[in-house]
Image (cartoon, rainbow, N blue to C red; front, side):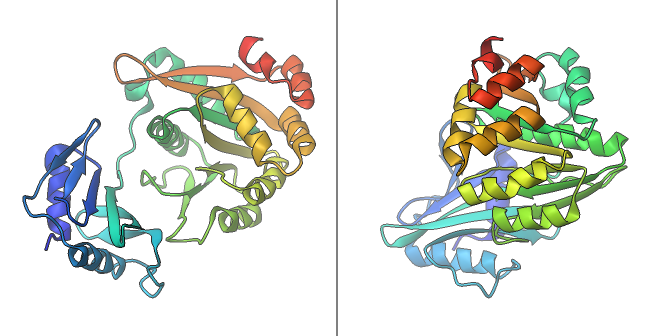
Length: 303
């Protein structure tokens, strides 16, 4: 049966981040494009399940039933942190194992135009206002946010609280105090994490995703406190990001008024020809705020 160390070796040898294990198929590493098999033996259903159970026994959720789907994280001594995602397909478990990055990228290394760095950081270093980060790629967002928060922590004395599903980079305390919480490991849900954040009242709150009206309802009072709240939205455009939030909202009028009062800037991330990140920043003007109240987002894109 394939073991945890073989999975780690397969990832490290190929500079990859994810292994996929499916009954009836050979173990595969997921590359940027396509896959590569790293073992010649096709896995049996019990092989996949036994590996899943072995990994879960190392997690904080060891006593929670597996069920038909779920996710959790495990720490491997000398290796770092692995995230495990699983579900049932055709009666057997499918398991994806991802290695969590322990070294966030430097902002200057991932930007297509390094001259954008100072303007970007000037916005993030003042811990006020609601910031939306939009991109069709979650990887770009995770890299960008990790780089920014690492820089903030290095040079500023804030409380930074992240609610992540899942954690993608391990952020370290520096001048700032960094509180990282992960769904499926530290908390049961984004909603639970937001209740904790409301109590802590951090200078900077980063929420990796919203997926329900209840979560958005929990987030709005935190935004209204005025501290910095960073929210990524995976969408094709900024306009689509705002449409998504409106659809998620139980009270679109309340959402629009909150955006009009507290939205400070939007960041649109796109991939450049050099596999780096192009960043377009839209800072919110008084004219934009009036448009936000009406739900007319055209000003944000054409104004």
